[in-house]
Length: 417
Image (cartoon, rainbow, N blue to C red; front, side, top):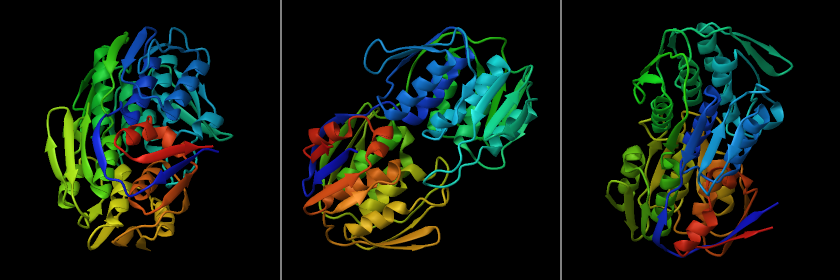
């Protein structure tokens, strides 16, 4: 199993480009199921999750072609097998995003229940509730959701809780439904806006993406389109947090600063000097950061996917920080590994009390999930000595060429088998 070796203590300097967003690319890839014509995508990140989703779509009969790095062409001329088996769904929960498109296009789908994951239970009840309101019949047999609908019809759907994948699934299903679908208490994440832009390019009629009420007027058919995946705001935030912790000056290009307001506010509070242009961000940090409190919340609040990275920054900050997690119930497992590096963290329910120390010490640690892995990388960059991170397949799910990008900034990072 591959590991990442980091020799810490080096400030980061230089310029790197930001990859396309994983959390935007995966639902957009599923949108290819809605049309027999070709969906041409640019800026697709080269990640394990993207490979897994490509394999799932190919299994269903979708032709996938990558003419060049970052480009992907998907053609679902015929869907031969509308199923998402457990062996694929369990490795990537985003696989559940095929449910809505398959029902809309084929009238049937069999998708394995995702089950639990390391950072907590993420039930699909809101997906099911919304699709049933649109006329689908869904039952569970042997761990699979078996769904059928002769033709979905527009409906008013009030989400009991804000769910990004639930909003995406229902929005895609609604594009081919009879009539108008109104999704209330919809998630507002930028990735949903990006999916709506792609669907609109395919001929969908969508209003309100990015607000808590989305209206979708169903059409008879969707066509092919070309779409460029938005920049990854979590990757951007991770590198910014790394520089704020390790010190130095870095410019990130091909970014989307307007999707990062909450993260940028916290980094400025920590003492970073940040300048923003239309598609780039420059951050400079001298000295130890100041401790910053944070509380995760659905967009436009502070993203749960950035909690671990800011917690890592707080471990070496001046002062004490309160980090409260409101989205996932088990998302402090990285705290135990950070303690191995000398961090002073106490967990009290859904809040971590982080007392900053002057320095961390390198040690062997183990990644538990994708964003926890990123927090260990940040901690390793500031720790004295060597930090060896095991189970970095988590990192490969969400960070394209991480060691190459960090290396370009002067970090001493190498992958080991």
